[in-house]
Length: 62
Image (cartoon, rainbow, N blue to C red; front, side):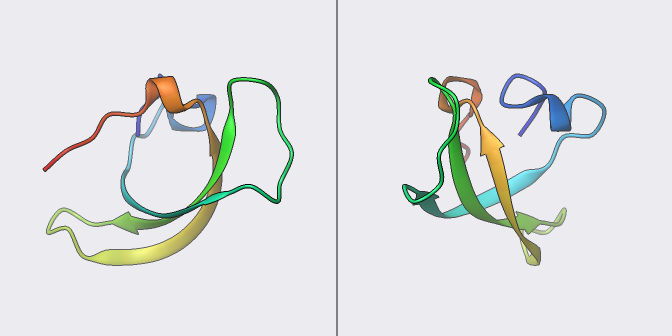
């Protein structure tokens, strides 16, 4: 995730695996809350986070 998805990632992007979309949390139009696993360089989960992002700014990777 980069600054395109959320200002919290402008200076430091992360790779993450989405666990679920949080329908129970309210946010602004065009944004959503996600539960994710933050991944290290090998693709291993190193942290679990709840983040707010613009789905239009997310990019899928293989």
